[in-house]
Image (cartoon, rainbow, N blue to C red; front, side, top):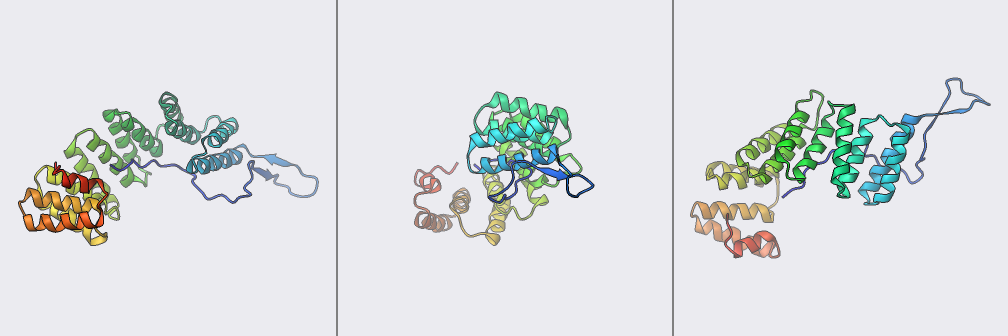
Length: 260
């Protein structure tokens, strides 16, 4: 199953010579004027460095930079959100939850925080709380990553065994971002399981129009063919799956006849 999408702000490419501190000149520039320290700029730079280190899995450096960022800006909700994600990555869940809550106590209308908190709660199996967090995120008027959060909500609902809710969320994700073609596979899988074969076929055709065959798309065609007793179609897609993706989990499921 796909991993939920965690939204991190300030992910920028940094040059190798990026400064670890930020200063700004006084309004009246000229010889003899001192440089004034800019705590917000310094904190932003530290956060950018921390995110770069997180991408490279250098957790020690990521933590050091986040600690410095908080020294400069101890009431910045975004820093607490990203620090929470750091603790989530290193499996210190109590600390992660504490910092997500801290971030929301400072800014209780930040959709990125609700989205990320939702993915965290879903990972802990706290599905109802996660669902509330996702829905709070998408209700924020200024939020632009609505499709990602609906997708996350769909993944979480599917994990919770709530197929109808997952279908609803995946459809909303697609409507907000039609370029998420791969969601048609999730929709097809769920629709096959609920015996809505006509819609499942449409999902697979929609996926096929924009993507090459994958192990998962072939597997869903096999499941649909099995369910609708189309043996010729089943054999066709099974042959392609075994030829192109012989080591895949889908190939193993087919060989074990695990269609559901």
